[in-house]
Amino acid sequence: MKGTKLHECKDCCGKLSQLCHNTKNRSLEIMCDCDKNQCKTLKDFTQCLMTVESLCQYIGVCCCEQENLSKSIIDELSSKCMKLSAICDKIISSMKKDKCEYLNCAEIKKLCKQAKSMKSTSNTKKK
Image 1: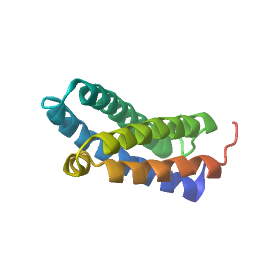
Image 2: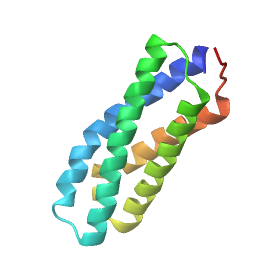
Image 3: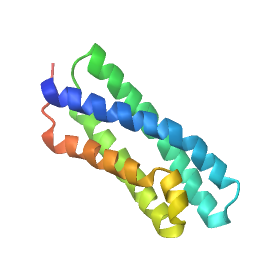
Image 4: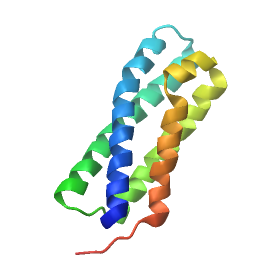
């Protein structure tokens, strides 16, 4: 991926990374007061948030330093966003609305959808 799409991806990943960073502490906070099933879901959510945050930071570095993203990194972003969105759906279906809002589920799903759409528009070249 190069050019305009690269800048769009960098912007999306920057927002997603920041949102994941800010949400993981909220997830840990709620984890202290929940039942066993919700606790497992929140554990998975927190781990996925940390993975996506780090992946997005890596993508940001690649965008700045290499000015290119490989198909494999775009596929990895899409895969991790699918997993994170699925966990958000699980949270939405099992927790009260105020907790879902506190955990930024709707915003995360929106940014993940945007990030996943990068897959179909990726334009890679091997060097």
